[in-house]
Amino acid sequence: MTQEVDNKLVPVLTEAVGVVKMAVFKKLKEHFSKNYPDWEDAFANMMAGAIINDLFCTPNLDPHFVDFVRTNRPVIAQYVRSLATHEDFTPLLPHITDALRVSFMCDHNQGTDTSFILTRALQMGILMEERTIPLPRHFIDSVKILGDSLGLVSPPVLPPEQEDGEAEKKQKRQEKTNC
Image (cartoon, rainbow, N blue to C red; front, side, top):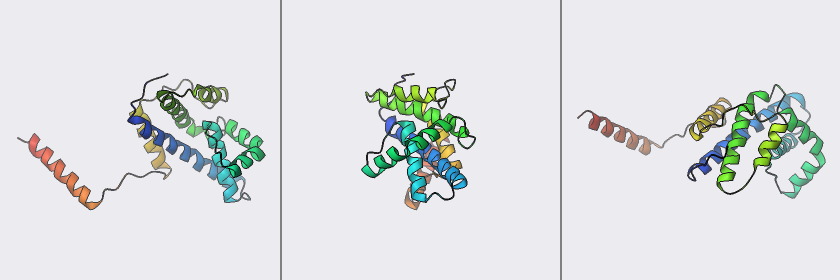
């Protein structure tokens, strides 16, 4: 499971993990607005963030957030566990599994052992053990599809001068192959 990751890929893979976190955040927010309409947006945002931080073991050390987590620990823990079984969240399990594994590989590549996160996710039923570890390209592609389906990412738009340059390069490549 400890596949080496090219150092150039680590930032790209880390960004893709961030998109999965955004997808989970969005689904949590939708769930909260549907099930707890009386929750203020700020509270729902902090709750969603705390759940994601707990899942990925990335605590927010801001004192306000630390107090929030301390006060709401039981609800946060309940929601982290519900990611494995609740119908609003189970469609995200393959993406969460891949993101946790890719995050582990990136951490391992940089000399940090975060295998405890995978063990914990497996024990809670969140990590899909039978799922094959994705190759970086497959992970990035699946995250692009996920992000696009939720309106989180969109393809980059080139400024007109770059589009023209790309068209010229493409035309030159075609001319070379026609010789």
